[in-house]
Image (cartoon, rainbow, N blue to C red; front, side, top):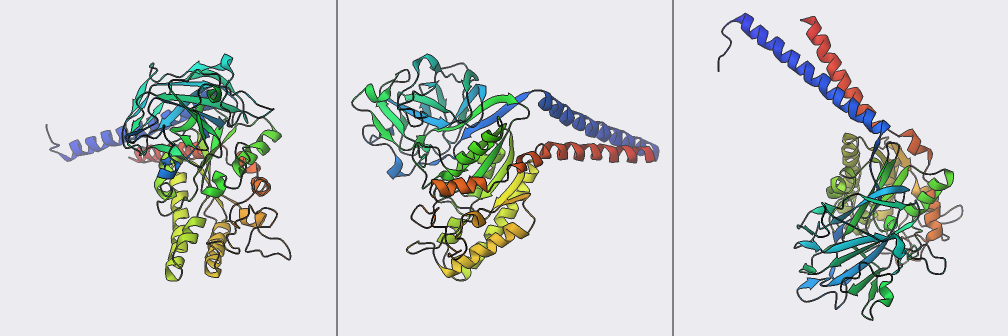
Length: 469
């Protein structure tokens, strides 16, 4: 290797370096613009259902015989139903082993439309429509071993689903999963069924064996994606039990995100998916029932497909479980800082960041009820409303708190499920109505446009500098 031995050689090298930098900048801009143009004229993968993966607590594991001394779901079939949020004709499924202590060996899996019973939507059904049954494959194989901490996507499947319809997913594990650390979502508010042997093609698990059991939990299944036009995108919601649907009706799909989907589809055929990434007991700052929102943001939002918007509605468990006194004030300060960090990270990924005010948590016998906790809730909510840090604010507190002549530190009695913290289906309807549907159009395409403009401006600056030499 030779080094420059004169001032003219050094100047020449500098010019070459500037030229290479300019070429690189223009090339990157071209790549991003090209990707954006392709996206605008083509199709892409979009989440159309999702649930937050978490470690299944011992009390939410299946019962014997599906929970043995050495493994879970050995020689067992699991049938689950999920509520789809966009219409599509090509889908793929994601199974998660994020918290598994051993390999998750999926032996076989199928999808089908559920059979309706007494006019039901099919949610929580043990039966399927046999004519719709299709086998799922993974990298061309019927079986797949998912290592601990990993996930697996199925191959794309030509299968038609509609927004606000239900899909049945059936999985068989021949060897089960060793140990008792498995991944799932206990707060499904949806009934699943377990049966012995390979029943992935069974028309009805309930009638296939006297040993079939039912449980109101989901296991392993974490996301469903669809191949959709570029105009389609998704809203991810980071939340706790209020978003997860505590107080809603099992198998009725009347959580507030479900009712928001209903509002979107009433307006017109929606191009927006609603992805519920909430879990009961979840906190912003600390792990507990699932990882903290700050630690799971990349996994549950940023890494997902076509997330254009994220609504941050979490913090009540942070304020409700903190020690009183100076620690509570510090917790409230940290909640605000945590929101700020989430906004920064979402913007870095080109995702619009919306914030929601924390709903009331005071009432007789409610563990979170304390005047000091209420003061900190009000202080956090004032920051959400007034700081201008979020791109938009959804004022759930204002929508569901007591009205004139009522205690406004408490939920409106009409919306209270009975514990002064979680709402009933009518309260969740009011929460859904508090989301301004115009926000979806207002922030459409915001992220990629910013990235393209930034790269273009970088290239233009380098061109100007080169011209000056």
